[in-house]
Length: 441
Image 1 (cartoon, rainbow, N blue to C red):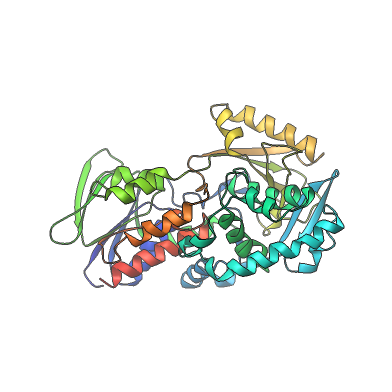
Image 2: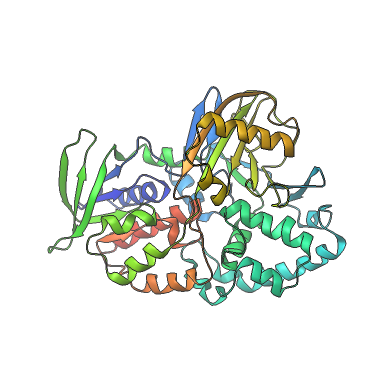
């Protein structure tokens, strides 16, 4: 051990990643988590023999930072590489694209022949942006951040079926906001990590198993509410927090990583400069109700998720099939269905009772995908606010200026997926980078 001390605020993927790497570097580390469990939006809940991923549901094999964490925790032998099939509901049936076989795009029956010919335009623009799209810091793609997904589709004169059944459907499913609002950088960043992925990385215990394994060797204080984090004259940080017993604690440490959602950062950092404060306060976030269903009979569908075009159902952009990600996610023959709802739909129903939301979800799925939700054995409703950073054109240009104001030698480092495109990989990588900067001080 180096004898240096560190506190990490937040036990989500970013915080656990930072703490794990700081401990590797010889720091004495404690993680302060306000909730009752580690994982944040990368958490799995077991209920009645079903395992529900409450936030992130898939880990593409392009997630390099996640793969490094898996290797470092000794989990590599437990990870399965599963097929990466995406379905789209159209004309009363599910049409599939296998990301391991790019030629499957050409056989996709939900797209007309002319629309398939237009796919080259998508590929050309992805190629132009490819090197600039990374999960370390999407400000590197700032020069492309000049239009929304809808504006890009219009400029490229995409046909209606390609626009709605592929581009808009993918955008809505991944970001939970409309393509008219979303920066085109997010679309192509997602395409690089998701569509280019050959496989999905899966664990029988769910996505949360990776974060839980990394946290197992850490000192994590649950129910610990951090009040403030400030610099101290001797070069470290002073953290004021209230423990699970309600007793206020004050600790001076050599280093601190603040790994909470952007919406909470400005309330904790009392001496944050005005320019960075304005950027963080100005970020838009999606909000989502996530409804999980454990069904007795798994649907006869191999996709990991099915996209729902907005002309079929504006509030429900995607239904995940968690049992297709790895064995052990559900009892034999049973299935896990996950409904992620759009921001506006969620806001209108935020205070509805869980039973009412489950009933509404079953009705929607039954209308769209008859028979899938006929026999629900158990259910779980999760409310995410904030859910994901909802970029607007200009978000990543502003991020470039924000990053330029962040001092790599600062004893207080930030970590979170708001520093790139919202994803588990971005969160893990941000924690990794924060720990590296502190270790090099």
